[in-house]
Image (cartoon, rainbow, N blue to C red; front, side, top):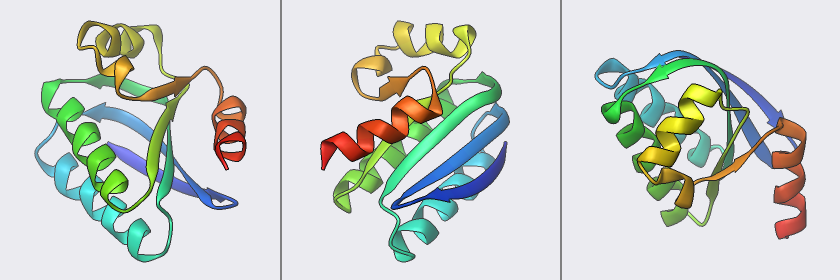
Length: 115
């Protein structure tokens, strides 16, 4: 998994790419989330347009980050998932947990309307 950061106002956009499979990905992603919280970013948007695969451990990484951000009065939303990843989120019922958006623009707008 690769992570590219780009701040959009008070929201940090993390563009993820590759496979999210657990193991080293957990340490990398969780370390990134903790660093962002320490920097004052508690609202995170995951752009998953370039994620090719996610397994159950990878889903656990996302759930863990989601809860960590909530404990810090923040939120995590997801945008631009491929049909394959969207299907995985549906089957696992994680679409009921994560707010998902078709575009990054729509997801960023949802942060503004929530305030």
